[in-house]
Image (cartoon, rainbow, N blue to C red):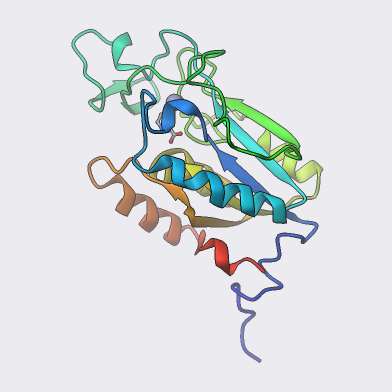
Length: 220
Ligand code: VGL
Ligand code: ZN
């Protein structure tokens, strides 16, 4: 007997009752022209739209910051975007102002077409705590409630897509593993910020944690 192949069609069927597609932060501010644009970010939209059509269960995340949020460089005198600072919960990368609650920049991409998405989970809404992950905020103790939601619904196989690979996608995938979910990242449905080697580190952390790395074509 050989070990079950995690890439077999059965393992990766999007129609599996346990499978959920998580679409991370496909919002205007992360797209070309946005305040924290991810290079080629818009390329994920058609890939995600096509994938979403294969899944029964889809959850969308939305970065949703207060004005003057602690993760903004503009909230720290003398700091520029992409510098870091030390907060009570650890090192924080400082970002341009982005995804402010109710703003056009925080809106989901207009051409994201997932009418059957079942939940939109917002994160980063506590003024003093960032949240890259859709599961746990950056203080590593405040839960967003997503793990309990998925468990309550019997959704145990998590497929992660969206923006950005090396921040919100990676943290979401790592926390999904930590919470006991089978987890895959669909790499051609993601794009990265890639600041200071962050993309290489994200993939090595994800691989070490048992996150599967697949492409959209691997889903049967
Ligand atoms: C993100 C930086 C700041 C992301 C969100 O969606 O990856 N990155 N806020
Ligand atoms: Zn953010």
